[in-house]
Amino acid sequence: MLIFRQLFDQQSSTYTYLLADPASRDAILIDPVFEQVAREVALIEELGLRLRCSLETHVHADHVTGAWLLRDRLGSKIAVSAQSGAQGADILFEGDDRIAFGDRYVRVVATPGHTDGCSTFVLDDESMAFTGDCLLIRGCGRTDFQQGDPAVMYRSVHGRIFSLPDECLLYPGHDYQGSTVTSVGEEKLYNPRLGGDIGVDDFRGYMSNLGLAHPKQIDVAVPANLRCGEPEKTDGEPTDHDWAPLTFTYAGFWEVQPAWLEEHRGDVQIVDVREADEFHGILGHVEGARLIPLGQLKDLAASLDRDRPVVTVCRSGARSAQAAVLLGKDGFAKVANLAGGMLRWRSQRLPVEGLAD
Image 1 (spheres, rainbow, N blue to C red):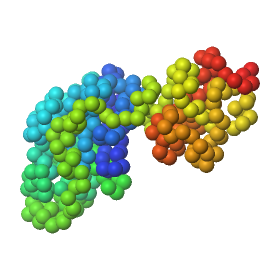
Image 2: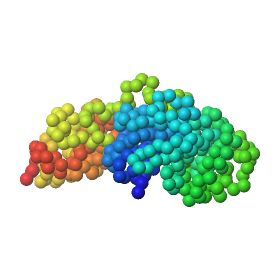
Image 3: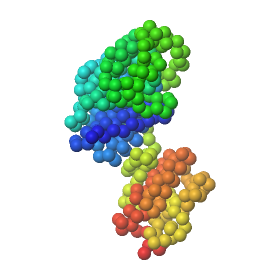
Image 4: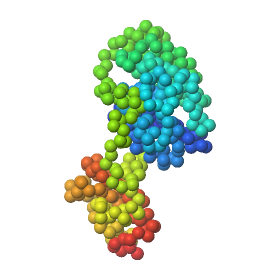
């Protein structure tokens, strides 16, 4: 049984794929996005996985890869095509190479045409393939920049991707309509650019008249991706989350542990989002906490100091997690949820005010 997750970056409409061997917990990540690295790290840690390698289907023009940040944080290797021209990778793969994770592996299939280094990754049992920007769902990648060539792409799709079993599921690098997966058999029949009886001259004419705008991020993304995502100043990811030993959750918010909060109560604003009867009830509340019920938080957020960190608190950590997200959306840069809420606080026998017993 394979551990598999399909992740999405809304800004660039990029799919990132996590695959892991459940026995060894070894994992690979295909096409990570720089801005989503915290999310990816949280998911990997929550699932108890070890990221062995991040793989790039090609040098992207619409987003910056998260490969360098992942290597910096988790020690994972970076794998790119030897034909990509990228510098700083740990693995330069060629067609038919295998990249292992535990007892599983993906096979590299060279599929140029969008770029020279475009590659498709085929799972060992040929049940899944990850096509990057070569073949999309009912479409394909562009061929009008970065070594693009319609005839080369046509041969890549027909000779290499369409030679996989019809039932093989295809997972693209992008989708702009909300579709998530297709299959070899579907694309053979229904792809309006490459399926059916469409020949190479038909395809060349189609691709030569798309009239697409220049990618907005190309001038930033391509140079960065040729460095495997390493910032020009290699000082890590800029962040406002270094004020405490925080953990980022896959649900999208930061958490702080009770012991740290007890030691640093005077350095932060503690906002308890329970109702008044709970605040003064059997669990008590953290000394110095301010009561702002969750339903009133939006109206009263302006009364908080935006320059001081905020820690949100509730009974179990659920309502306060929502409060942390709401404050983040409201522009609070330093905000975290108290992990486990007052239940965990009390279980660790930390001091409280109010009717504790």
